[in-house]
Image (tube, rainbow, N blue to C red; front, side):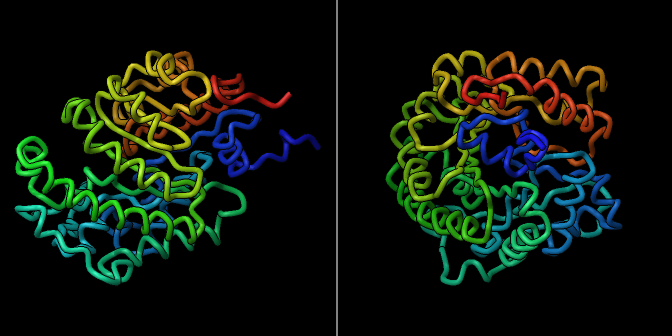
Length: 352
């Protein structure tokens, strides 16, 4: 039996990160990949998958198995750490709609943010850690397991009033940097712990640092040093993801120490490939909502082909997959990535 025939999804993902030849491109992500049909197949409602480790893990597994993804990713919402830091959350437990947990209240100033001892035992943090352990036990030999954490600036935006935070980046940057310093240390330790639990790769999602929000100068002076600090402390594989317009900062992103860069649909992927060269792993960059929830299924192959032609080493969504998908679109996405991705990408070859 050939190596190609015996390559597991996990082997495919891990070899991709190592830039070693693979049989074909894996279909996976560093953001949420859970879908409503998979959730409902377990007899669960959307609010339940955020509260129970079993519901979280098995929803991720059901999504992986239903469509043939090469990885499962947890958690699904951005409020787990802010909740553990003491902010109240809304889980919308009575709603039948897809409503992610939100933070109805935030701190007014950076100095109000307190990082307590025993963070991993607070709020829903045990749900996430136990879900990772379940994934490792249930699918860890066959499929890859991904997790993610918000970057320091995006995390700050979850904790502090955004208007105040943005104004302070220009008028009182030292106060913002003081908070970023503290959050950076916290994010380092959380990522290291998730890796110890068995996460195969970790994505650092600094979603609020694109140039539609912050200038390249602020990115260079305030954001990049903290990203570099986090990524230098984590083991490989590690991915840096930034939403929005990143064309002006892609080279700076490439200096932060990630094993791969992930960009969304606002990025000119072909131009970014020119800037970072053929040795950098570049992931992106289709619109997950438009592609999987809105487009005609016959258009999905074209979306994948466009990402490949632009130089993607992995066809990744620009953000979380919106759970209310058109299932045929998801099936076609996975099939197209696996089939069209049999040719080499710029940084990763294929097995002979």
